[in-house]
Image (tube, rainbow, N blue to C red; front, side, top):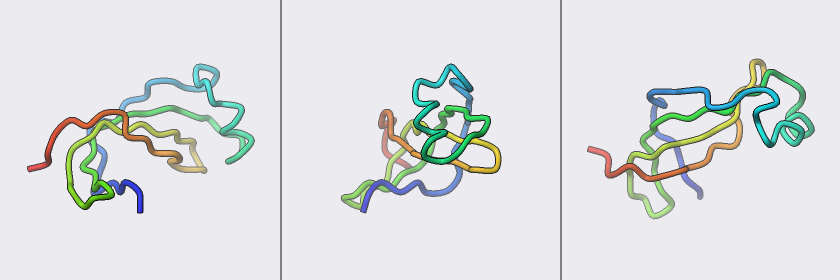
Length: 80
């Protein structure tokens, strides 16, 4: 089992879109063409060892396709 996002992602922000995304060709080939955006936010995550904490999460999303390829970029701390 990998990392699981628990609940909502807080403070979502767009950090790149369209041709500003390095992986745009791969995303279009795998998931289909769309108005792709790379986004980030803060989320409560459950790690493989069962512990829970806050982390900065990055993902790609496109309208009609949805959110794809979540990544943990940095661990912020333990969740209350």
